[in-house]
Amino acid sequence: MTKEFEKLYWRTNKTWYGFDSTINDFYLTDDAPDKAKKSFDLWQEQRRKNALQDDLIVGLTMATHHH
Image (tube, rainbow, N blue to C red; front, side, top):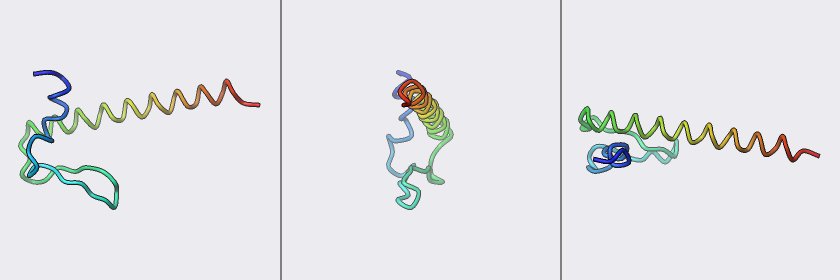
């Protein structure tokens, strides 16, 4: 099993997750097993890391291109 699959395992069963349009994000249902919860946590952790990297890149770009 690849790391990518492990991160998205929670999306392999539609009864395990939903999408909340008020917060524009996914959530897990009470039906999600522990393995799905772990995979959801991995996915969220990766998203946070990616968001931090994006923020860092934007910050560095702005710092080097200010007038």
